[in-house]
Amino acid sequence: MADKMRVGVVSLGCDKNRVDTEKMLALIEKKHILTSDIENAQIIIINTCAFLSSSREEAIDEIFSAYEYKKSGSAEKIIVTGCLPQKFINELFDELVEVDAFMGVSDYDKILEVIDKVCTGVRVNAVGEVKGECGKARVLTTDGYAYLKVADGCSNHCTYCLIPYIRGKYRSVNIDDLIEEAKGLGAVNELILVAQDTAKYGQDLTPPLTLVNLIRKISALNNVKSIRLLYCYPENVSDQLIEEIKTNDKVIKYIDIPLQHADDKVLKLMNRKGTGQSYLNLIERLKKEIPGIAIRSTFITGFPQESETAFSNLVEFLQKARLFNAGFFKYSREEGTPAFRLDGQIDETTKDKRYRKLYSVQKKVVKENLKEFLGKTIRVLAEGFDQNELVYYGRAYFNAPSVDGKVYFFSRDEVEYGKYYDIKITKATGYDLYGDRL
Image 1: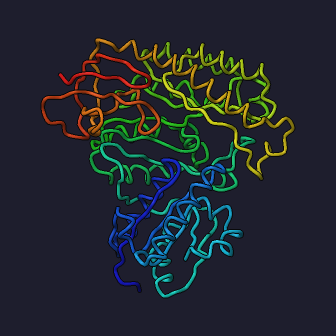
Image 2: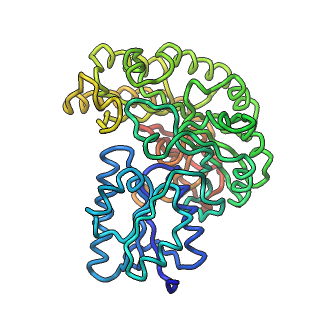
Image 3: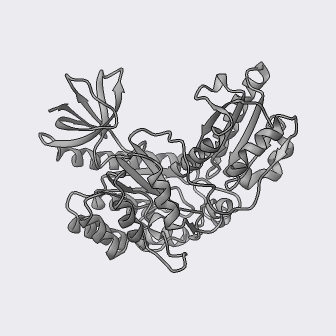
């Protein structure tokens, strides 16, 4: 058994990956010392993403950065976990000899055993089959909010996406296990439910459940103050779910619905269910049923056969939908996906031009949305202090962590992070609001 080691972990990719990292940290701290200072770590663990070529490049860069510490003698071992080894272990094990061990997306429960082995000088391939979650205990890496991964994998098979080939088919986590995990997080101002398709939760369980069943159980927990919903595919946003968002005071009036496009031909090529019009209908209904709801989405431009007309349809959709927030991606041609083989691949120059256009269009929409808050008082969860602006910042109900804007505010009195404050809005710029604490 290895002596107590200083272990530093770098978590890349999405918030679902962050949950995996937090579970791994809880296991590591049973035997070893966690450090946030990678320069001081004897063992460096990199939990990777492999969704896009850019994600894989980032992971490889991080591995070689860690290797610099190993060469200098400050680090002794490097362990690479997650999506990258799960998908590409056959290539990685022989090529990346700088790495001492590899583990896949379902192997986090092996971490202590793997550390013991690498500390004896053994090089380890511990990538196993995709299976369920590796426990409920976590070391939180967020402040005031936390993520709850309600399912893993995906069975939608969008033609551009590697997720089913990396993380397997959609698997909902047992509801009792999720409630126990949520209880164990302690006091959480905002619990953010995530999965590849959060709204599909429970459909694969026996007996089947729904996301609403889970929301109601979580709502009964005293330690959870509010619930935010991310990644709800449009076809699974049911009447029951809309009613729950509308009537449950603990559910933040916010929903992330990944639409990916709005042109019917492109959506069909993507193997996405629905049409541009059905998406508009859903958005209009949500706004009507839940006044003030903030709707977020993501879109891909430059998909094969995305004509000028198809792109124009997407631009027009954004102007009509008036989403509160939106993120955009340039199509990444991923070998092993059906879209890789499609005719009509779009050149990078066109992708860049369309990408910039979409952000320009959405920025105007956001600016108009934010103007509605001028002169009003809104509730903001304080999260930090901006040394450049010399003001505090936080998030309102329409801001999810990392992906949306912020609310910056002046306060004469000390501000406690992780607490809510009433802020009177005085200025709207770009994606952010500015105001004064009352």
